[in-house]
Amino acid sequence: TSFSTLLQVSYSPTVLERRFALRTLRNLGLGKRGLEHRVQEEAHYLVAFFASMKGKPLDPSFPLVHSVSNVICAVVFGHRFSREDETFHELIRKLCGTTCVSLPQLYEIFPWLMCRLPGPHKKALSCYEVLSSFTRREIRMHTERGMPDEPQDFIDFYLAHIEKMSLPRSVFYIKINNNMVYSINDLFLGGSETTSTTLIWGLLYMVANPDVQEKVQRELDAVLSPSQLICYEDRKELPYTNAVVHEIQRFSNIISVGMPRVCVRNTTLLGFPLKKGTIVLPNIASSLYDPEQWETPRQFNPGHFLDKDGNFVSQEAFLPFSVGHRVCLGEHLARTELFIFFASLLRAFTFRLPEGVTKISTEPILGGTLQPHPYRLCAIPR
Ligand code: HEM
Image (tube, rainbow, N blue to C red; front, side):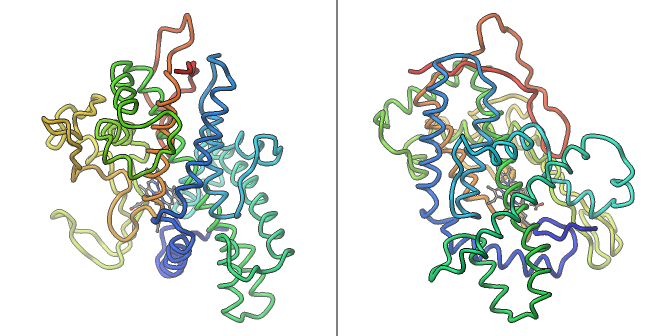
């Protein structure tokens, strides 16, 4: 298979790439406050875009995917893209409504099957190809401009890393053309589709639960001033909003099945014998919907994360980022984005269904990530 990535099943190259990616992302400020201003900047553009619609009905997926992807672009490519950039526009259009996240894994496990099957993965594959050529263009621009004194983004770090390994020229270019492109694609796909899909669900739940939306707005109004920059740290003063963001993630359960693992030796799991080589899929939904852990597992209920006095409480069964060695690399960034984007939007707008629309479906479309059916809403300035 042509996919060789951070997300794949097999172990040894992945461990090295993961370690490298983690160190690099940390250097770039992921997990620290360094990236927060990028998120705040995008939240500002997002609010301006919704405001420019003047309450007219719109499908929120395009602006949300655009904003979330731009945060990753800042990390990986070192800059954001304006709404007018045609190439980026095409990429985002392809990403909207397409699940590409699990594509490399599916090819890794079932290459013979994937090549023969017709179906939606062909659309995802074409999206993956557009992304790869986009990434290659950015890498080319980086190699042409030469290395800055201080690496500025993921590509700079990666190029410096490859150069340090003093490889023969041919291997150098193979590494750039394969591993590097796929690693960057992984960050882009892992970082864009997941976070934006969660936000698309979030706005849908607000339209479906106007009482919850109102309560969030009351809390935001009481704690924040209208133009104050929202920080991730503010969640501590906003327990209800924080609980709603958590409940959006729990209830939407977007990655209901985690990345596949391979048993490296014979073992037992919960009493079941597993042979070396067996593929194991973590069932994330089993914890997010566990009837023993949640009061109303099949209902949207922010109370799952609040005590009787309205304080935020974390829950052990809340595992949307999975756990263990392969836990999500972007967890901190994702949490920061979800909180800042959601709070910024709800402070500025009330979300409603367009006039005449009375039905909303909160059933997911089954795919690599669970996505809502396309819908339109009105963002009414407050
Ligand atoms: C709401 C947003 C997100 C959710 C729900 C999510 C969830 C997950 C899950 C469940 C996994 C698999 C872990 C496993 O199987 O044990 C994963 C892996 C991964 N995620 Fe995320 N993720 C999100 C956002 C992000 C962001 C923003 C980034 C990038 C900065 C990112 C990058 C990755 C990468 C690179 C992996 C593979 C890690 C590895 O296998 O070593 N994710 N994510």
